[in-house]
Length: 157
Image (cartoon, rainbow, N blue to C red; front, side):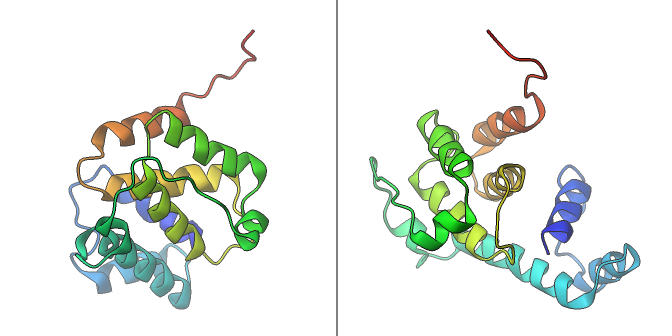
């Protein structure tokens, strides 16, 4: 499912095409690209749920916006997210790329993935997908893109 999400994100993110304009055509394209139907439907459902997170007035993420909320990871979250991933989430929250609301949206979408272990690279892409879908997060999205694509290739002293 994650591969399909990445395929869609990479192919539709900067295009004018509406990813949900014609779901049958999109499904056919994904089938031609070599993905199987059950995984395609899971990925499309995942994207639909992401869209619902910020458009549903009853979404728990929109009801309250605590300023200084602290995240305590559950045991199952710790098993899926390495210390490196959890530290990265804290880092991007501290520098203002995400806030407590978008962090919880990221955690929600991570929980919906069918992966037992989330890599740091996977996490970065999920954060980017969430930020892309949150209205008013353009600056944060650009910062996250910089964190993904502009990583230094040499050690800094």
